[in-house]
Every structure is written in C-alpha cells, then in structure tokens.
Image (cartoon, rainbow, N blue to C red; front, side):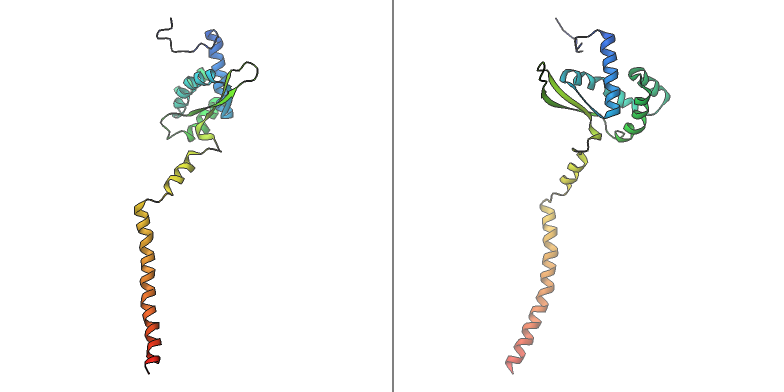
Length: 171
C-alpha cells in the first residue's frame, strides 16, 4: 500500500530521478519553458518552486544551496540575476503547467511547464489593465456631469439668439 507516500517515483531510482529533475530545472530556468510528460511536470513544479523562492534573496548560503540542487553555474547566475528580479514581489506560484494532449507514440499526457512571468503572449499585467478600464456606475455619473455642463453653456447662448431674432420681428 502507498499510505503516506506522496512522491511520484516516475519509474526511476532515486539518483536517476534527482539527476533528471536537476537537469529539467536548469533547462526550465535557462529556457523559461520546457515540454515533458504531465507527471514529470508536476514533480518538477514541486522541485523548482522552492529553488526559485531561495533565488529571491541573493546570499552566499542561498547560492550554495541552489547550486547543490541544480549543479549548473549558468542556471544559478540566471536565477539570481534575471528571474529573481521578475518574481521578487510574487508570493509563490512561479510556474504554470499547460496540458498539450497525448504523445503519438505511447499516448502519454504531454504538458508544457513555464515560468509565469516570462510568457509574452499571456501577460497577467495586461489583463489587470483591462480590468481597470471597465467603467462602473459611479464613473458613468461622472461622465454625465461634464455633458450637463456643456448643455448649460449652450442654453444661455440659445436664448440670446432667440431674443435677438425676436427684437427685429417686434419692430
């Protein structure tokens, strides 16, 4: 029975699994997105999110800890320089898993795992801007007020024109 065993072994021994996750994490950090099976993507998320959290604070201890997991100097540099700046204010949830369908060879579920802040096509900040441009009822009242002021300006001119036209007819 599997009571209390939360880790997915992915059909590999411990050393092979840790090496594979380390390589996948460094590839994800360097390329910002990778394609793999859904099971590997879910395990990679558990592996890489604490590493990205460590990367938010640039200390020697954190660099050594991250290097012990990744074993790749370029990935560590990338994490502490570029990625830490983008995810600095995010409290978690650095990755997104998108299902891609089934692989044609063995029908395995494929997925794309990507870093959320580095996706150019879907930018949550643009969605937030779109939410701000909606007008509520209070704003409709404000837009109606300047229109009423414009009408007030037109009404004094209109009677003056009518009075001018009435005077010549009265004579």
